[in-house]
Length: 238
Image 1 (tube, one colour):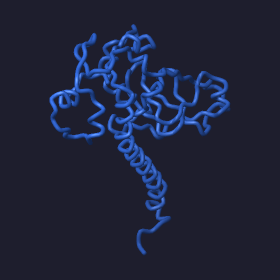
Image 2 (tube, rainbow, N blue to C red):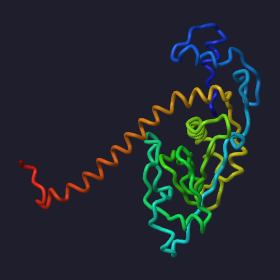
Image 3 (cartoon, rainbow, N blue to C red):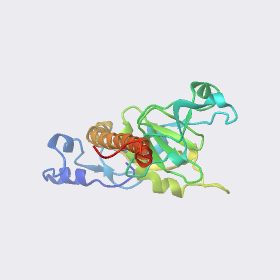
Image 4 (cartoon, rainbow, N blue to C red):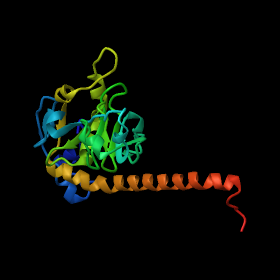
């Protein structure tokens, strides 16, 4: 977490009953504080560069002049596929590539629940992959290290977007690089708390993903049936 909200530790320190969390989850938060380079933080938490808690993954683009590399069954993500902040997930991409395209380029297939962040031009646009997919080289893929789940990783990046934007550089395009993630110090809770976070959040994100898939299915059905209705091929009368 890049923020400084330690209300739960303050509640435990003061002996107040938990309000929004169940007692078992609330008990995971320490009841004391310690000093850090970013000021007082909950005891047992740590301040470290964002790069130490994530695996940074790169993308690539198969040769566009080679037809055998394109129009396959592997979704290939670019910035134009970025979902809205409320949608979170990317469930479909405008372009797809083939296994041959993967084999002959720097592109690689990332598993679902990989966070994608745009790194050039319109920087720090985020997406969470709903299905395995590849991406172009203008983005980074991010996955949490052991003990830090994918939901926590995604929301850590959302929390850090403003600070990442402040660290962009480039004469033509705003750019973030691997070094950018090394310069941003964030506050991280214990793995026990991040596991509890993922357990609470994952079902909610799962419902968003299910709704997006259903919406896309209905949109496809509409686009298939509407022309037939307008042409008179189908009749709305019984």
